[in-house]
Structures are given as C-alpha cells and as structure tokens.
Length: 254
Image 1 (cartoon, helix red, strand yellow):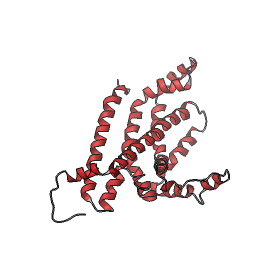
Image 2 (cartoon, rainbow, N blue to C red):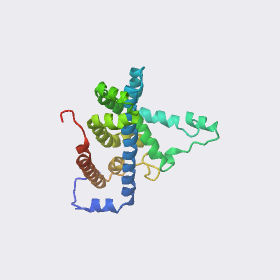
Image 3 (cartoon, one colour):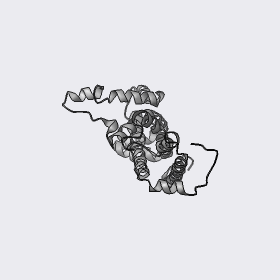
Image 4 (cartoon, rainbow, N blue to C red):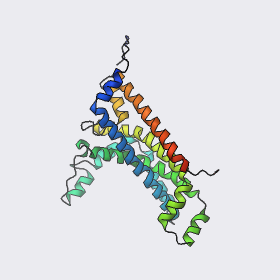
C-alpha cells in the first residue's frame, strides 16, 4: 500500500477510474442511496413531526422517546439485529410470510434489494435524530397561526405545505444536507457488516469503494482518486443545492 519509492503517475489513476465500469455502477448506487435517504429520513420525519405536534393530543412525549430510541443503538448492533430479523430461513419476517405462502428473498445476495434494505437499516438509525430536530422546528411555529388556519377550515395537508414547511424550511434544508452527507458515511457500516459491497458491487457506494481499494486490495492510488472525485461531486451538489434551494428558505430574521 505504501512504498518508500514514489513514482509520479499523472492522471493515470483518474483515467483508470473513469474507464472502470464498476465506478459508474457504484456512482449510480450512491445517488440511489441519497434518494432513498432523502425520502425516508427527510420527508417522512417532517410529516411525523407535524402530526405528532399538531394532530396528536396525548402521549406526545412517548412518541418522541419511542421514535428517537434507535439513535442510541450502534449501527453494527442494529445491522446484526436486522440480519436476524430478515434471515430468509429462520427470521421472524420469513416465518410470518411463510404463513401466507410467501418466500422471503435472500436480500443480501439480490442486486437491487440489498440497497433498499441497507438504506432502511441506516434510516432506522438516523430517523429519530432527524425527527427530533424537525419536531423542535415545527413546535417553534406560533400556535396562533395554526389555530387561525383551523378556524378557516384549512385542510391539514395545506397547513403542512403552505404554513409549516415554509416557516421551518431552514431546519428542513439543514436536515437534507446533513442526511445526504452523513448518511452515506453511516451506510458504510451496514455495507461492511452485511454485504461487503456485494452482490457484484450492487450495494457498494463511493465511500465503501474507496475503503475497499485502500485497505482490501491495497491500491491507494485508486482509493485517493475515488476520494477526490467524491469530494468534488459533493461540493458541486452542495453548491447547486444552496444556489437553487436556499433562496426559497425562510429565516426568522428576514
């Protein structure tokens, strides 16, 4: 991995990377992970926070504690728990489905399905944190505004879309950015524990591929190239996001 004699290779590592079809497959996987995490860990916690604060009248503290509880569990432990739950032979889900003559597929060797399961495991771990942050933002909205909307018989979905989302959009943007950037880091753990990037790199992402090149096949040049491309892609993504989205974000001091 590290040699005392160093040889300048120019752009060879980048050329090899862009000529490798595995890179494009892993890049597609990375964007798919971002899409799933954005839906499960941004949109759904937003709705949950709104419903918990403005719809539920009792047991709010219980719901908050129950939803946040998985955040205390290590992703390694969580991955092992889900491996048992989703075991296609003896797991609880497989046994339940067997009563309905349904066979649970071997998800960790099924391309496409592995990404979904790993995304859901990561989302289960991160969901509670995002929910609490969004709940704090939603609960900070003046109750008078919501009560006025209720008196005018405004439907709940319009209250959420036209009042709650704009008034808590700064927090929503923060959650989206932190979920996108940190979520892919969290996903490394279940990939490493459950699939090792398989089947056929079908569950790998850019971060895991960089690790694999550096510490499994000991190709530090390729790993460095992947890391640089990842940084550049995320920088472009963040710049585009703030350029086109932040202009629509409402801040309290504006």
